Length: 116
Length: 115
Image (cartoon, rainbow over all chains, first blue to last red; front, side, top):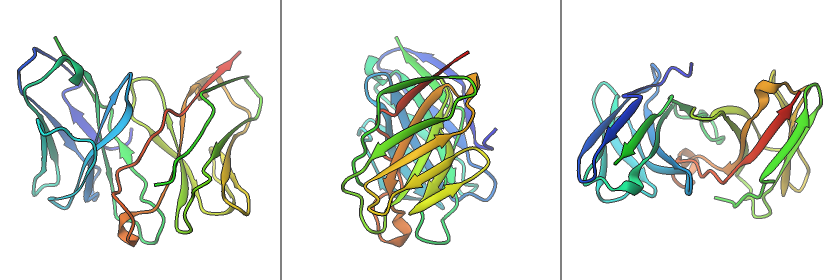
């Protein structure tokens, strides 16, 4: 158990719909990351938040958005869903590293999204 | 972030030592090398990280030659539960002036352990 929680575990919805995925980071972690993993694209970084502010964007579509709340939990909003959005969505959290080494990211169990 | 090249898949037997090599010819001076492990339908899990020479923890060892253009993850006495995908990542944290902290995962190495 990484200490990162994600809900729901599974989500099945139809094309054109909108869904919200939720992530609670480990206690004390300020950074939250979202990743998408599909069979053909592998594990792709979407977006990072640090202490409530957007820090970096990866391959995130304009139909997707995220935010991090004052209690540090984060939500990923996916709208106008398409069949190709079906994937595993992972959240990860970390603390800022003390030196130059990259921080260790702790991944949650993921949310499996199926768009029909 | 430096591009990495790993074997697509490997297999071995229980009790054997497994070495997975990763090539990163364009590694930058400040880059660290990090390995993650992922089981099916689970999130990746940090295994080990190093900058140069050798790093060892309770799970694995990481060997990095002097030129740092490659690295080898060594798993001692593997078991069936070590069957997973192993990712090699190279990069530096944003906090020291690098790029985004989001990790760039390649395809990884599918390690299959047989009884």
